[in-house]
Every structure is written in structure tokens, then in C-alpha cells.
Image (cartoon, rainbow, N blue to C red; front, side, top):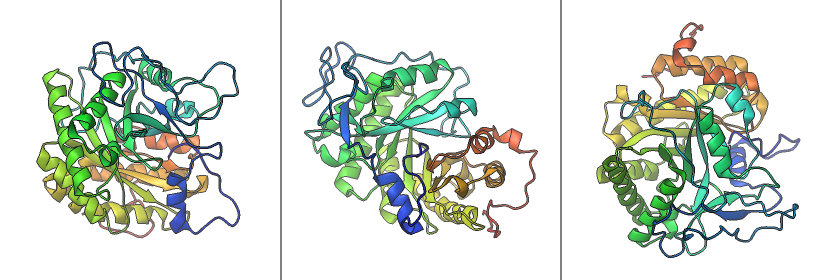
Length: 381
């Protein structure tokens, strides 16, 4: 994640465990869940959901330090969305070269806006008590604005904000909500409350075929309903990847979603990197391995798969990605036509963010010493 949830310490565990640590640990203040905003008046939230007009009550949270309750998202704080832009991206075309990740339970990230980032995902939304109620997950922040207020400010600055389902802090709704109608209602609730341009799923196929099928059917239905309203709902997946690409279960999950009718805009690859000469080379190897897998799962020609891919190095320390590496990574994006970049784990330096957030045509003037960003050349095709 973009936010620096953990700092580098002497004697930290091996790098192979850093990725898990950077995505699976919550802050030491304890984990908690918060209900999403109530749906607009007239919306049938369904059993286990927050009914319109009922104040969202935190579940299992610690008492706030302030005498005024600090809910992460207040009930009935439905976000007002601007009118769709006339310059909306074509189908399957990512809208921005860089996607910033915002932790709903973390601190604001003003440096992302200063760097020119205008596309954000915010998470994570997981299953709450009962299994079918969507809740924000993570450690309860001490003070600060609600998620709705943060989204409103980002939109006022011209940004787009996508909610992310799943992630490391709990179970994705399709895993725990076995009733297809209630699962669809839960997803509808989030879309109605936040009115996002799209949704992201940081959830793969390891939960089993039943959960994968439930999710695929519900998301396909959501997209059909959104198209009928004249406001298409974009869908992305963000999945872990290694030098062997995606896990077989995740490849099958993408294939199932596509066959069910889900229009998947892109698939982001979470790749842990280590500082040193080979860090970007590892990213290139993972991307090269995943490209034919994504092409097959989405049923597109391999040479068109680059635009349907995102690449998100997961940092364990700020030094893992410096300005020089960021420049080569941006050049790699431009040369191969990669859909988008992001950074997870430890927060990178501001100058690194500025380099990665530049539009690809601005990167075109940079030196392109090799087809891949690493020190050891790897053919991108």
C-alpha cells in the first residue's frame, strides 16, 4: 500500500516475508470494521445491511479519544458524483497512468495530489458480521475526516475514486455471503452509496470455485444494470504475481468472470521488490510471465494484453525505488503500452511519485536504455 504502515527495522524478516507483512498486518491500535454509508432513500439494503436513516455503528471498535464519535463513514453521507466526463476512456482503456492507493483507515495522502495523481483506489471493503454486510476494514483512525469527505475532496480536485473489495484485512463478500441475492444487494449498496466510476477486487480464486462463481455472476449483473442507467461501471482486479506470473487459481478466476460476462478493464500485478540491481528486473520477469496468462484469461491477443495490465511494485523500504528506477519503470510503461502503474507497501519519496504520475507521452522523451526496467535485459515480448 502507498501508506507507510511499517518502517524498515534492523533484523526484519527475510524479503520473502516482507510482502505478506506489508499487506497483512494492521496497525498496532487494533483492527475494527465500520459500516458503509446508508443507501439513498428508497434503497432496499436487505438483511444485515444498514437501513436508510440509521446511523452507522462501528463494530468492535475502541472508544475514540475525542468525546465526539469519529465514524469512518457516517450514515447517509452519500457522495455526490460529478457528471460523466465527455473524455471518458474507451472500453478496456485505463484512464490514468498511475493509480494511488488510499487506506480507508490510514492518513490522508496529500503528496499524491501534489504529484498529479488523479486516479485512486480506496480500501478495503470486507464482509462484516453476518457475512453479507459490506464494511470498511482496518485500524480505526484517531480523528480525521470520514471516507466520504475524503472522496468528495478528491473529486473536487478532478480525481476519480474506486472502492477496493477484499484485501488482507478480512474476507471478500463473495467468500462469506453464500446467498446470491444478498451478495448482489451488498455490492449494489456500495455502488449506490459511493457512486464510483468503477470497482476493484483485490481477491483471487483461492477461496474456491463457488465463491468465484458467485462474485462473477453478481459483478456481471452490476455492470449490466449500470449500462442500463447510462453510467457504465468499470471493473479491475489486483492480484499477487511472482516471476511465474499469476497463480493458476487466479487465472481461472479471471476466465470465469469473463465467461460470466464481466468486462474486466485491467488486471494489476502486486509484485514484491527488493533494493538492489535486480529489483526492476524482477518486476519485468513477473510482467512478462503474466502477460500471456492474462491474454488467455481475458481472451485477447497477447500484444494487446499490455494495455489490460497494471504493475504495482510492493516496497519494503523507501530505498527500494529511487528516482532512477522510477524513470526506467515509467519508460517501461511507455515502451510496452502498459495500462498503469502503482506502488504499494512503504510510501515512496515524493519525487518518485511525480515521475511515475507523469503521462506516458511526457516519458517518451526520457532515455530508454532497454526494453525492460531492470539491470538485466529481458525481452518484453
